[in-house]
Image 1: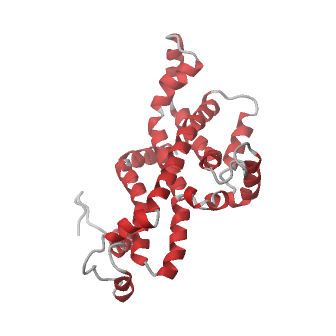
Image 2 (image 1 turned 135 degrees about the vertical axis):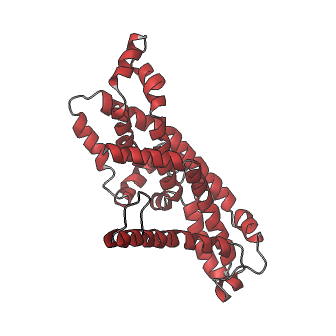
Image 3 (image 1 turned 180 degrees about the vertical axis):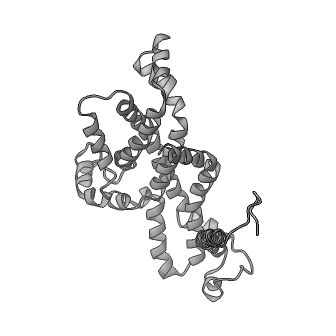
Length: 291
């Protein structure tokens, strides 16, 4: 066997080639097969799911999706998650970018220690601070329970917990931008804020997209904080609603509708990742080369 360059493939090269392909095949099977099984099960009846779990549906039950969206209330919870996710990103990205820009371009006494404090936020699981966060939200002005059980409170908590990752990633992007750009903009009359908003912020857009996607994936699937801070059925986000539907499905045996709800939860993240996949790959590759 020969490679494309014409060099004869040695036995170690052949073994490496086969092991690489085997590993990739196993990885694809581990990712694709469960996803396909969930998609197929979402249009099957509960009897078919348990009677012939690996077969195709005899008659696709598209009503599972309408039942999950309307009867189970997934549509309302989908909107809740969308509002919370978008509102968090709208606040998080400018705030995180401004903080990262200052750390990258305006070092001051104690800035490294303060930056370490930000990074430390990524090391602690959010379960450790649920009680202090709950008490803090309850003490803030709002309803009878402060900002507990409100989308506003959940958005503020998500912004605070996502800042560490955002500042860490965006500071690397701003450090890579040449200082000469800011100096040239200053000669043209830009102030410090103008340099950030008119020059640096647009140039850091690839990083913003990647940070926004990774944060959106985490926020869309976040469960621990939401289950502690949200308890009204009308305010439940999708992970909480899906957990509630799983409990009900166990007793009501409507597994087709449960799988349809899972597809509805997964679909937006898959679509967003598919749209921006090339940008994510380019940014991650650039980071790897830089590292």
